[in-house]
Image 1 (tube, rainbow, N blue to C red):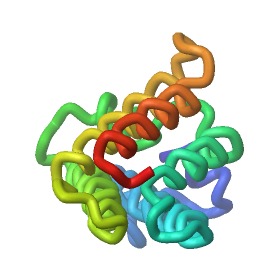
Image 2: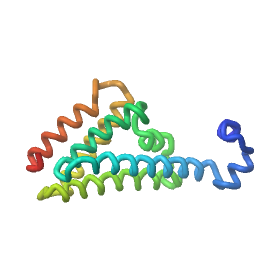
Image 3: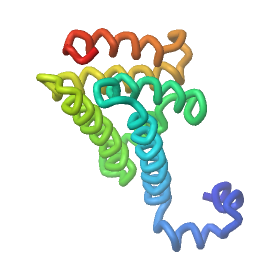
Image 4: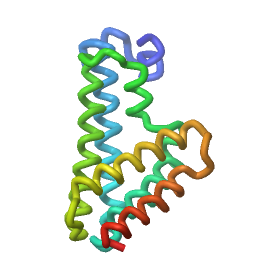
Amino acid sequence: MDLIAKRAGVTKKTLYDRFGSKEALVAAYLRERDERWRAWLTAEVEKSPPADRALATFDALAEWVRRENPRGCGFVNAAAELPDAGHPARQVIADQKRWLRAYLRQLCEEAGVAAPDELADELLLLHEGATVLNGLSVVGDPVGIARELALRVLGRAGTV
């Protein structure tokens, strides 16, 4: 909290007055980051025709991890540091992942997929795996590989 207060140019008391606790500050930070990701992702994806939007999420993800998040998923990283299920940030993290799954399902449904729930689960696993592996440098171009796998999954579903 000392370092955050110093970098923000405020006192620790001001931070506690605004957020109440360290836990609430972490949750607020993650909430803001999620809002930024959602707005950016949806704006990028909507540039594509509806039939191509589920795959476009991978193109957007590639740009995001290159520009904003080369160290893996900030939400997964935070979850690893916050094992207490009651921590307020854990709810923000879970909400973010549920939102992404719901968004992928919506895109699949708009593309006319017969089983949008199943496809959304598969795409979510590819997204999350690519993001995590991107931060670990274990696999070369994990987002590109995930995109290729998504193309196969979407092809099997008849969308591409």
